[in-house]
Length: 269
Image (tube, rainbow, N blue to C red; front, side):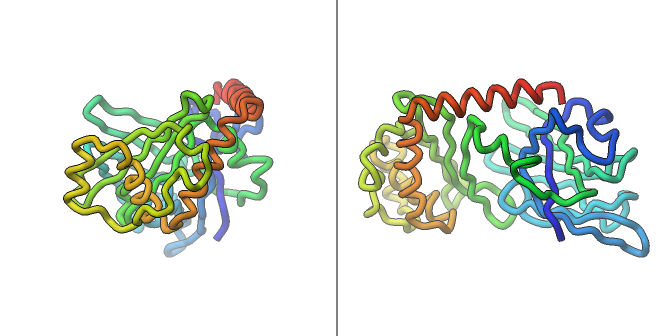
């Protein structure tokens, strides 16, 4: 069992997989996941485990594509359907090609991702996760065991005066709710978040109030996110810290400049 690195949205697949290791200069390495090598009656393959990201169960990827090779993985969230398939790259077994598509009422988008499985991931400073430190979109997503999204939040790096936190969650019937909160609300520290807010699931009466537009129901949405994450009130403490960072214009400018440099460096991969 070892960690392996993944590169997302590859445009030149044959070029990227032409050597035993990925091309050094343009690699961003979006994230890492766990890999286990296996043989079934002498047939090689790998098991990929990516909990908390796109998948909720291990994916078996055999070089010959035969059993126990994983079937197409489909996950639905509201009106969005995500489909994932995995296969060993036919010309170089050092790589697993992960093809992903997302269908929404607005259309279908597709991307090709590559997992480098021939060597273990060793250093976050060198090959993985470095972009996520400065990446302009930050997310926290809570998933059910079947992979469906339950709740979460996201925001983009921008000055505190315009920055907003988007909270989203689904009720027990699968109905989705979403609300935006200005980050300036969190500048007063932990007390601004509402530590007295209940983490219990909300009642039908509160659901009615939500649809009627009560202003402070974002606190209950945040409570849903905190509860589903299993991190309790730690989430309540994080947001004032993020607000403080967004209010630091010097730091924010540096993050955005570094991110732009990485995007420019890897745009041809």
